[in-house]
Image (tube, rainbow, N blue to C red; front, side, top):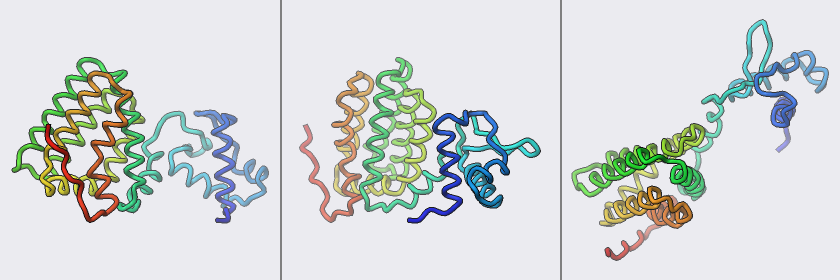
Length: 240
């Protein structure tokens, strides 16, 4: 796809920031200077700056100028969040992204989490298991407990950016995760929900981060089925 003049102007600004020629907190050149450097119109410069301000990279200070932000802004996740929300739920891309992100977050939690963090993870897991085993619990209640459990693990990882990314993925995947729980219950396999949580909790609190990928693959078995829109559900594994 051919780039517009605004796209080219935005890319120039992004390159200056990423190369640290324009450092966080610094004032960028004036509109007139950018016009001369790029040989573009004032409207083009203003539109490019406006978009990058919306995305959280630039901050316009009236009567002073435009600055590169020196802190994380929630705006920075807006574009990515929107792209995830419109992702085709039959695609496995969201599943794969979630596995990559959660693997990293859970590994951090396993390595950095304090004993109090691990106790909180166990408590959150036990609350999920209680609801998952109770046939009176709705899929929404079970899912909320699962989201709270994963949020607790994120807290143990002690990385605010990772927690924000996890929240975006949780929002984007909410409906398919709910259907996954419904699918699991329909298959008569509440055991899988409980067993996968126990395995994941055990792996994290005992700090066996090298086993996380295998455990997550087991945890996401039914979600993979839902995302791929398969007609046949997996046969529940033999209860041991």
